[in-house]
Length: 360
Image 1 (tube, rainbow, N blue to C red):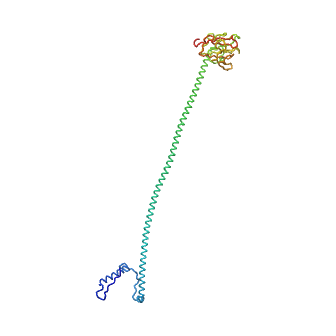
Image 2 (spheres, one colour; image 1 turned 45 degrees about the vertical axis):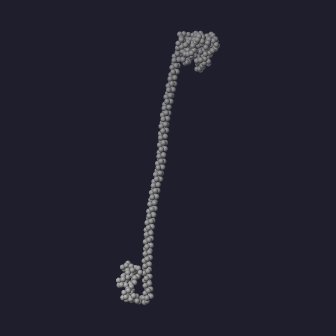
């Protein structure tokens, strides 16, 4: 506030000045202002030093100028102190502001750091989640690869098992084929044995059939070829006039006859032993009583060296044995339908009378 001046009036006790109470109030107000300005309202805070004594003031300040200079000095000091206080206050305020700013900035920094950390944590969490996802994808790929490998191995194993089963079946089939082949071979062997047995049986029966003619002719069994002849006629020559036929059979025994008529049956085999001709008088079979219409069917000649000829080539022989396998459809319509003859001597000839089976 502005300094308050006590009103003294125009003259003493003229009643125009302030009352004692009003003047005292102004004085109190002024001191209150000073105490408030220089202290805390109760005590003066400014350091004014040791109060100088009157003697010191009188000796030190001889004039008003010196007093004024000193007062100015003290005023400057007060101002300096006040400015210093203000400077300190401003500095404090600035520092407080800076501190506040620092705190705010620190808080902001902490907030930003926290946000960044939260963001990083969020990113890390996202990245971790992505990492886990990538890991899962990689694991899934690994599992798929493993599954594919397992499937391939399973398919391969099943295929191998199927192949083994097929091969085993083929092996069984091959074994069965081998067994069947062995059985077929055995059957063939048995058939061969049977055929051999049949041939042997036929041969034995033929030999038995030959025994009669051999017995009747008195020849050695070993000299007669084995073609199953029912009868064997021994042929020799009576010079050039006739064939001598012995071992006639059918009740005539081994008697010899010149150009005899031979009575035989169809479906039988007869033999002519030509070894008694001495290499002459070629022997033939023909149809009819004359000419050279030689019969060729079912004729077999066995030479003394074992050479076999058939058909026409079996005719006109002077040694060996001639076999005639008479077919079932040949039956003589006349007594001279067939005959034997010598191609060198016409007188040497005889009839062959062929009867149907059972007619003899």
